[in-house]
Image (tube, rainbow, N blue to C red):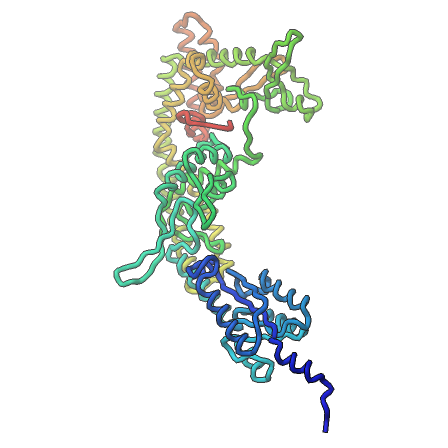
Length: 578
């Protein structure tokens, strides 16, 4: 016969003391946590809590501590409340008897995480209990636990696979798989048979402002920061998530909008582009123009100090640096504005000897350049007629090349379509699709550029020529009467650079098409404008030299730069940061 050494009173006290249980609750999404049922708890969390309490009472235990992960996936054990629970178990060794969950899949849907969690619980003498499943420390209970854990992992992985498959099929048909960006709204629609479908529609309030953002930035007259401030003043705000008010559009948010191809009708999924069903806000041409402007800002964007209509057009003849504005104060306190070489001023160029030149002197010399190269009406008409005849001849020659480019574009677009179809039929892997798609896109971009150059020549070269000729006809008087803003635009249009030499003399380097028109005849043109009377002999000599130059120009071949519309001559717009 054996006798127990345990004190009868102590044994009675132990049997009467309830076991201590910890309850762990989890819902997968924030929506589940907030969908009805009270603040932050939805319907699922209270249901799990009630089931866990009932299970604890059935085992003679009380729930002394609760941990709740709201909107946390069980794919990973890196959940804040789960980690706090495990830490609590470690800190209270011998006190915690049970960890109760509603189901095993609330704890983990990954077999490896489940093994690690169970190892920790067993190490500290804690038993895992499921309120809905017969799991305990018996061999049968452990077997069931292993089976349920494997089922949970299978369910999680299979669900992820099905979701990805569904998303892929959706983008193939042009759908949007995530929340549409600013300017669009995701809408739930129900058809006459009660079936639900989600689609994307334009946000009537924000879409016009997003379109305005692309149109304004494409002009090149804005920084992203200045445009964001302007759009905020126009009323563009972010969407308001739950409990967070909407805010004004920021520079970072606007930049992400400007580079997002979704706005031209393209859905990108896993780095593959698909044609979307949603209404595009901008044309592909406008979107590409914006990308080109962004790429041109390689040195960033900044607001200029000391604005002046000549700033940005003047360069040092000695070292090639830009000329910047600097103010010098005399002994009497008078401030004198000068153009100085940026290379010498910042000591970046040590051997530059460029002296400072008074701004007023530079302004006077630039006005003289305009006066020297003004085209009289008779000269303008003669030159314009001559050029128009040559342009029409060249347009006929370019039609055959344009047709060839369009055929090549159609061929590449068919190849891209076949490539996608092959991928849909599992004939080629995703990485090969991406590689080939990038090659075709690069080729199409180059062809589009060539087509646009030809179309520009076909559709607008004559109008551009008229613009250019009107600009240089009596341009001295036009420049003298212009506002500072118009003077800046004229300078940026006519000249690629204005050079200041060490002697303070200003010389002009013309931009196309004015280089082609003016450069070869600028000396005789200056003489022609200098004369008070223009005799028949001088006029005949001028027209003869001009004709020889134009004939040589067309004999050498077409210059695409000559076809470009003079830049900087768009109608004035509200501008900041230039």
